[in-house]
Image 1 (cartoon, helix red, strand yellow):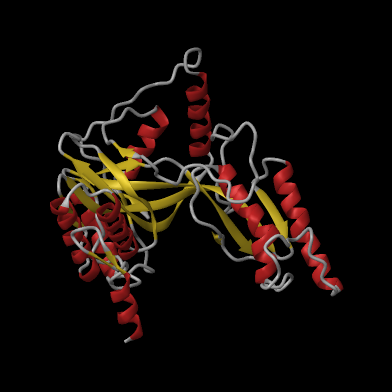
Image 2 (cartoon, rainbow, N blue to C red):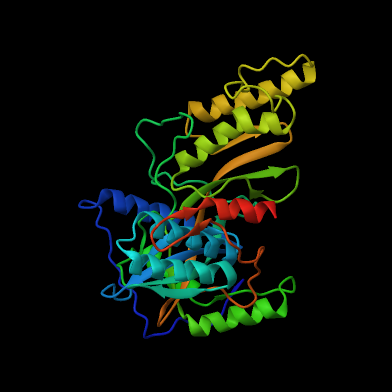
Length: 367
């Protein structure tokens, strides 16, 4: 990617400077952010998609309805399909409201719809650019000291905080710290460059700077990445709202998932069998399993951001996303964005009275 030109002068950014004696936490976070900005470059991974909503009276604000974590626009559309279907099933107050929701579902089942209005709400599939800080060695930024951590970490199975983007309000007019404002202004002119991108992608990227000249920075998220040998880092988990949630995912992977994936524990083994309790007869398998258990114990024993198992480094990283923003709000999918699937019927037929017709779906699958 490349920066070209300056941001438009008529898109002001409100800056609020944290004052250390009054706002010590914010001042510390600002110092962390400045340090990261001075010692890293940005690596852009590519687009992610979700759904945002806007109602009358929201002004320029939008709200995330489907987390902006999906790898292609159709996955976000399918999630919106489910959101509206369940709203029709569980929340509709009368037949008229249910009819409006089901009409939107019907469109999403057969069309690639990127924006629609249902009742008093606009729904838009939105596109974010995912990026992260990277140092001179090509290592992705790990969590910062001031990123939120639980006072008493919970490592229980299924332990997670809120979902990414839960209740997130997208407000381009919200005040920013000086480093946030600087980052936002510098990223306004970000475009794809390089021969590895098709001309259609490069052209859409340039046009997006003109049609959506501002950007909005979303809260940091965290995920597991892995690297084997000299290969580049690649994603090893979904995005999480906190570094601890990402560590819990990695802990479960080391104790349960990866040993089964590598055949060290049978897939038929009971669920409570893990890297500590399994007893493989093969000596090499036992040694590899012990390495997984030791790595998991090190991870759980402290707030580690990287562990290694034979042949693989596993790291907790801090990732960021930006939404391009125009006069009518956040950017939607670009013509050059690819879809990995077609629109389809996801749920059984729901009628205007809220009755689910499971038997029709069963007959369709049998035919």
